Image (cartoon, rainbow, N blue to C red):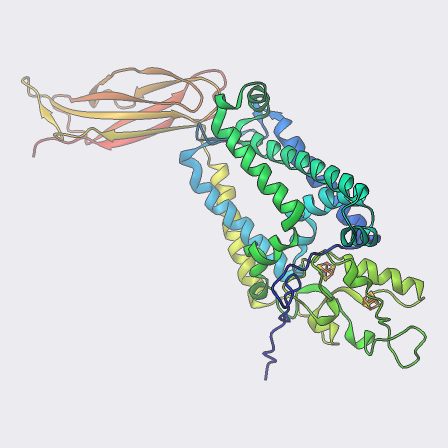
Length: 460
Ligand code: SF4
Ligand code: SF4
């Protein structure tokens, strides 16, 4: 019978038995995985800071202009009509993340989550530079408020506030663009109150999060963290302790003890304050600091590394890891569907829209001369950022007499215009359909004309 024991142990590392906060001060650690993480952090922070400055086709590489309901992504521009694409893109990316989690556990949390990237890559570094290593910090925090403690804390929180403001300003620049942000910064806040409030609130949230809340975000608030127990199983590669090799733990000099010397380094470096030797815990964010810490000890003791390592729970207890599992196949299929639809959607994305609608009121009018008149309205939207000219033409002028109110229209980027079209029957011709084409006619045209049909109504 399958072992139904939960794979996560129930243990809240951040809350003491009396409900108070167990404030974590992780120790510094060096090693293979720490170097990799630092490299990933540097690359991701550089991308975050530089993207708003990179201009592609006259707009930032990523610019979410919510006020104008226009979005620019690496040279492509989208408007509100394209919002359906984001559903497939986000669901595809979401399931890709599920696949990653089913395969490698919380690799996203440990290496690429913005919260981890900024907390470990920026704010904890600043804290280390100003307040020193873990033991010094713990000693100072437990001591009286003397001059040394006051200036270090004041400096740290001042730098934290500045950094929070910088991160918040860059974040807002994705929505207002860098030139607009600089222009606003030169003006009084009253001239752009809503942006000012956003930056003010975001700075406050980031300062609160990175200065105090920290790992509580991962443990209490993050929904992805809460979903771990349904996305991982015994074949997921997680960070685990090899208890077969490590237990019974004891002093290195004790001949009865196994490889774990109970030095506590793996606990001291853990940013969420847990003991990995207690098994897989929801509080583990997969940062791999305990692997580097334990490997350091094993190297010093001249024992093989990997007592704490990346492995599946099944392999850690001596079994064989299965790669393909139903959950992995399901996540992969759903992820591929989302990404394929999004890719087709992006490829089919057009630079302008044109729609034909019958105007309200009577469906047709019989004129005094016996001709039948139908009234339509064509709506043309320029989805690009520059101004373009569009031509509306009748495709079957032999079947009907067309009166197009404005046959050539010039539209600014992101703007649309409605044009009334009167269509009259021609004696002796019973054609059933009006046919119109809309075409961008300037030199930058990249698309074929759009052909629109609509039924022509007559008395029976
Ligand atoms: S247990 Fe290890 S991998 Fe998990 S959060 Fe702590 S240090 Fe990081
Ligand atoms: S760092 Fe390694 S040896 Fe030290 S307590 Fe943790 S598992 Fe045991």
